[in-house]
Length: 122
Length: 290
Length: 209
Image 1: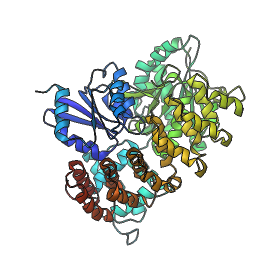
Image 2: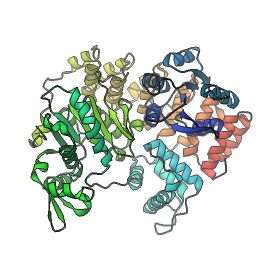
Image 3: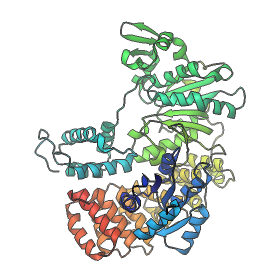
């Protein structure tokens, strides 16, 4: 069973993304911001992070940096999902350690395919 | 407001209303009520509805959500959280202190420097005295390192109670019998704390949001701030977190209550976990959170 | 060695600051290369109107999170109409923490925010409009639902509308349902918007998602 952590301050977005990615082989954890994500991830096996950019307390870029600094988490893939569509935003995401960048609203099939790829599923 | 008077029974809370309340409460406090807590939540919601003269959940929710003072939200938080003090409450935090934190702090600080602990609020003293007892019982480092325990509260009457150090059976029931006999004398139904423990805690009157606090309360290695911030509004909570951050030395730790989290308050602390126990640490490198 | 005996209340006062902190020195300290010094300067300048300019200016160049927190705390009670424009501009900052600081500040100032809400909701930058919706979703203001209705009916950006619908899950009312019928027609091919509308219907009217 793989675990995906969805990090977004909007409840509806978390629910929507959960609906897309959850399956019998995947379980989903949720967090409302970067601090909560790190708290919940501590001591757990997280296989993938799906991270929003604009969140209170700790934004997505900072969360990515913290994940990459953490000994236990730094190899976990990160998909950054953002409303921001400026050319530099994806670059910034990759600089912070994200593996993939998508803009909202996400296409469900694309998201699911990317999750599958990141989790190393057949 | 739609109501027929305070005596009218509040309507049942629908599943959708429960979801809506639960999402809002989670957003505000970080506390998420599982479905299994439904009875607990509904009972308290209906009680608050009755207290405020609402028979319909929707009208109560709108009232509570948009009230300018935020008083009803605070009342709701009070109702949804159990706040009871007794010795060794949330004991796993004292265990973590003795098993992990104190040795780490001991290694960080130069020889001869006291380790300082702040317990806020002191309430009637159970928490700071629990810290003292736990250290005496379980931390060998006391053989070579002095520890100072400071505890503060805004309420003079609870401070007086703490200074007296007289407790009920209920308050001490979590303390193992041999320890209880070591540190308390029993007089009827009262348990009198021994003077050595009472003398080991400095009790002060202070408001954590008061202007004088940042100057008076500094250079702590460990802070217990349990079940206080949850009762503050967002703004006060943020301000208090700044005070707590500044009160810690770099590398110092802070415990919150088991249902509390920095995730709704402040991002400056580093989250650390010892087993299942979450502790927050002020970064060691000059406080820069990189 | 062991537990220190209590020295009475004076023990907690032992750490009183030694040096006098005058305005000029503190403002200079805001530029100090040590983050701790800058943070303490901001803390000590809290609520000092004469320092407001310096604090606001520092926010624009500061990168240390712990200093930014202190800067925003310091100006919070000094934010009025005179500096509202500068706070609003910080919503456009490249730095997410600066944006967050501005959002939090506005959330605590519903009256100030209300006097600028139209300006924000009509900003050409869709991200600024999203931040305005975030503030609306958090503040206590009787017009919050009305503002959100206006956004979902009129904004052209799907993410702005999506954010507003999310907020209506919490603060929507009976009028929201009719509004959502129109929004549904506006974005009939957008799966996320349709899903979000169903969520609000569930929250407000108990409909199944």
